[in-house]
Length: 148
Image 1 (cartoon, rainbow, N blue to C red):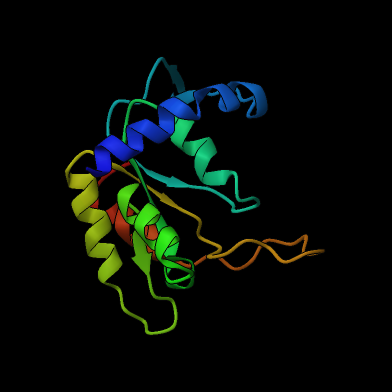
Image 2: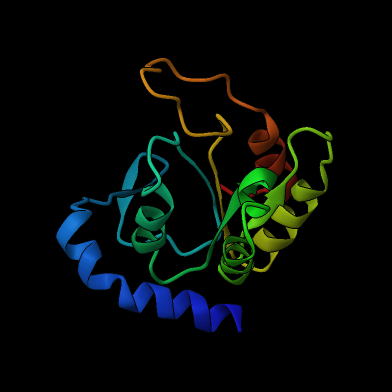
């Protein structure tokens, strides 16, 4: 069911993607340009907008990208929780120091899914210009799963 929902969202959002998300994508491996990224990867990005996840969903159109999602977002309301489950969101409880999300990320990478991590942990507040401190979990996930 979740693959159906994910592809439905990708297909119905393709036209807004072409109109609003003007991007250029370059795939590099060992500093050499390659045509496509074929293997699973840990995708690390600054979190600057609510459009970050849709941008990555369309950038990596042919693969499944599973984002890490804060528990506060997961528990916002039942619609949001259901949507995040259907698109493959991995819940992270930042307050309880529960690191089970790292095992779920490694399992997803083993199944050839990519994992999207925003290491700052949240969107910046208004008038915040400096980067927040990065959380180190993405390093452990990449090392443990041996993925780029």
